[in-house]
Length: 433
Ligand SMILES: *Cc1c(COP(=O)(O)O)cnc(C)c1O
Image (cartoon, rainbow, N blue to C red; front, side):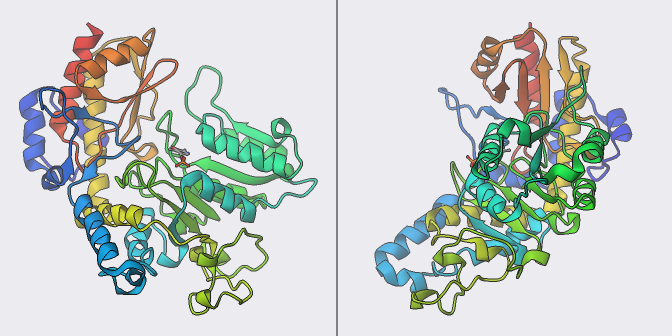
């Protein structure tokens, strides 16, 4: 079995619906040892649960505790001097994350910074990249955008004195469909492009799992003189967004989903290098975005750092950054291209097994094309309700329920196995009865 083969047709022919096959895939998996690098939640009897919820909260790398402990030790040993004397000095600590993070999102290091949390970063980016005029002020989002993104966008419209209903344009799937079509976004731009100031799209939709063509969307937006930003909450660590190459103006993401950095951990932010020294952009500022040489002179006028770092506000929480550093080190050891290759195979197997159920209550709303999705499959279970999901949880599966009838499962290539996927489908079958 060749794990490097990602051609879907061939894979479908070679996948087999039995445990031996799943276990063989795990034996052949060049990334199999990374499962051992994570801590799995267990049931009351101490048996590991089938954890397919890395799209909501990634699992804890075993090394995270050590990285955190190191900072606690340095704090006790050095007090304030830890800013310069800690093993990993706190003053430049965010810089230790930049290079590995930049690789995962396909950006240059100067374009990336870890800071704040996702929604905060989204607001900061809109302060700079949403500069509406009376005529050009509307914002496009995909219709099933994550609620927080929608609230943020609506409040930005209102903040600038616009009516949120009038100013918000939804890119919507067609009647009877679940996915957004690119040509419908083109149609929106053709008819309303003159009035649109910003395209703010979730790179990989949290609900459907649909991954959008970021480069095409950016070119489309720019052709109509709009700014373009992406929310990579479900993209970072899952797909390779190639941010620099897309030409997007900005992007934001969180680190607690696919990036395994712990609940509420800091987010990431990308600003394209063509804006690195763009003094025309308005921004909300704080001392951590100020020139490092004179930051502590305190009385200087604001002197923005070039690149994404110039948008920092505060000195960041080191403990959260230590957890991010631990996680990024695991990613770097595994290699993102290898992970993506396994991910296609693993999710392809999940898709194959779900199809094998031949149950017409089930449909997969996520695109069938591996290039148009990450690891998540969103499974629609006609006439199911939350009680069904509770039964699945009682059967030892951690997955995610979205009203009205969708279960989201996300086999994470870093720590999930082919056997996990096989196990899940067996348990689902049992609960379906
Ligand atoms: C998870 C998620 C968020 C969460 O935002 P926080 O500010 O980190 O709480 C926002 N947007 C999307 C698309 C998400 O998936």
